[in-house]
Length: 158
View (cartoon, rainbow, N blue to C red):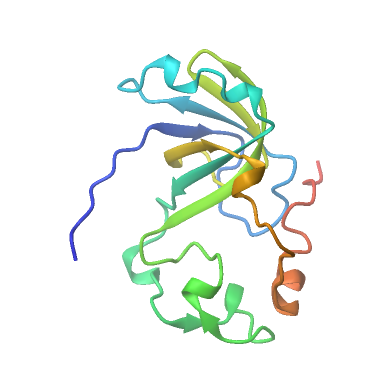
């Protein structure tokens, strides 16, 4: 297969410095465009309520990459499932994708809520969320996934 080369278009700025599995709901992040990106690239993004952010898990070491199956969060109470059947950060290409709430835009900075990426994370793309790209039928998932996600979007306690 062909090798792909990507350049980050922005970087995450927020108070979360460590990778933690839960409590991402109250996290406010600023996505600051790289200097090679013109400010106009964000023009009218604030007219959307949500955006999808594609980012690079830059803190995952090569030896932690999983290509096969594992227990989500290494919890043996969850079934062993393929890495492509879960959203863990130890993915072959280290790509993350999250739908965030757009709060505001100030010049080259986009303020969002609910991005599960730590400070300094490289952003590869930002796309507006349009209803037409969301599932057109009921979303179904296994019980272990619902259990795993129960505290993911809770508000962090101060």
